[in-house]
Image (cartoon, rainbow, N blue to C red; front, side):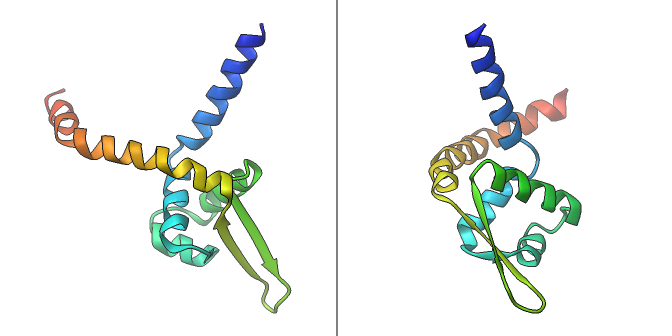
Length: 113
């Protein structure tokens, strides 16, 4: 029973990180450092405002991204990777490298299928 709970928790974490946008947001913040919402949105291009908001909130809740609001008019909000978010990057880079290495074979298989 305890192992089932553990498996569900790990699956939940992996599914959240493996969604369409989370890794791209983390990679974008890594490449650009501190960014405002509009900069992240512009960099990613085809993400909706709502989905970016949801993704950033989820990453903040999980401790991957920090959000800082400055008392200005209009308010300025900046996002940056946390230490936990940075600790995930080598694993994301490994997945990206794997995808690049296997891209041609996978695309070829998809074209046949």
